[in-house]
View (cartoon, rainbow, N blue to C red):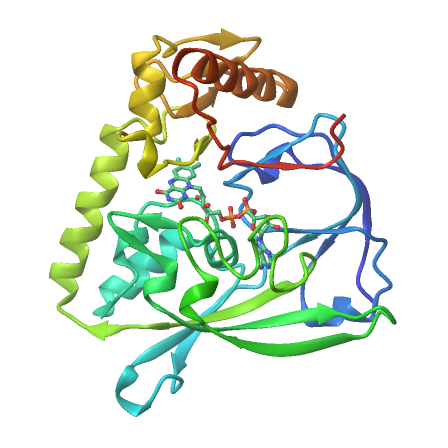
Length: 301
Ligand SMILES: Cc1cc2nc3c(=O)[nH]c(=O)nc-3n(C[C@H](O)[C@H](O)[C@H](O)COP(=O)(O)OP(=O)(O)OC[C@H]3O[C@@H](n4cnc5c(N)ncnc54)[C@H](O)[C@@H]3O)c2cc1C
């Protein structure tokens, strides 16, 4: 029987380094399914795209961070050269490892914090590519009303994915139950020269470093881009003169309009207030609605 921990602070499990406690916390492996989870469930990957409330999370946080590893797969046809990756695998070391072995396809994710499960859930994108471009299928666990878990294969249907949308995350109605656990994802890959792949990933990582991604705790871009706005959201926020704006310990990065950073002692409420302030100012000045990309998790007002 797996150990359920109680009152576990979640800040160390997030890249914002912010967030109150989980009432119940369990590290996932398949044996945990024998447990009667206390609902609701929240599935936690690398915590790189979430803002956890200061009051924390009721129910049970299922932490995927120890469900890691990958292997070659025959899915997608004999010539497809696919790989199957467990969802808790951290993206950054995974991509480095694949590139060293001459396995191409995921290099656009280089330097991205978080796990493969979170990347599939969010249809993560970078450098003009997104997860949906390489995804073949996902294995998921779903729980029915009786509490029984079933494992399912979900093939990628192109219409299920769009900008920062997947069958798992398509508010208000995801195609797959919102408490499904993504177990693994299978991706198309190709054979390439390790040195060429490494050169690409190093360039991406350098670009992220130059853009200040790793200077302070954050969750990456706070707002989604929207083509209808004609320019990136970060540029809009910059032109509104909001770079550097600070509430409590949360600040709009002085060098990047779409990053909110934790300068050291930010609360989740500080970050949320800053998000709301930017939305109100953008609406008042330009009549546009900025949609947060960061997910609000836990017990909010
Ligand atoms: C510095 C920085 C740069 C970033 N750059 C980018 C970028 O270029 N492009 C981009 O798209 N994102 C970017 N991000 C955001 C983040 O890295 C990605 O969204 C990442 O894919 C989130 O993965 P995660 O494991 O951290 O997900 P989490 O934040 O843990 O969770 C996000 C959502 O996914 C769900 N989830 C996670 N794992 C599972 C699972 N196994 N089963 C079911 N649901 C699951 C969670 O329940 C939650 O709803 C950046 C973040 C940072 C901090």
